[in-house]
Image (cartoon, rainbow, N blue to C red; front, side, top):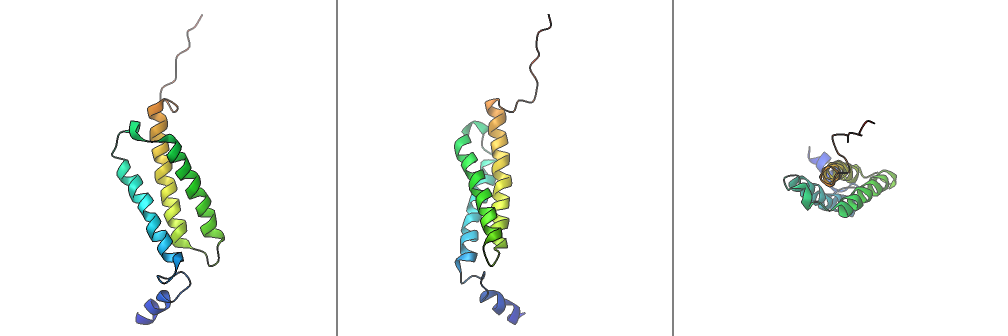
Length: 108
């Protein structure tokens, strides 16, 4: 057990590197998005939520392509992508972009 922990501690993605602490800090975005789910959708910024979706999408690709692969960063941004897409759908429904009922067209 101690040798496994020591190997993780000294690995290229261990807690002595930015490959570890960067993703740990980014979990704050996920936590903030989860907390915001309790707020009314009128308070959601569509622009900022869209930017967060693009940001997480780009960094998911980065986490996959960087060597060594950073699975912690990938998981963090995949989680944030899910949370932000849900928030964007809440915003879209509140703005009427994603209406649930179809408008009736008058028949002539």
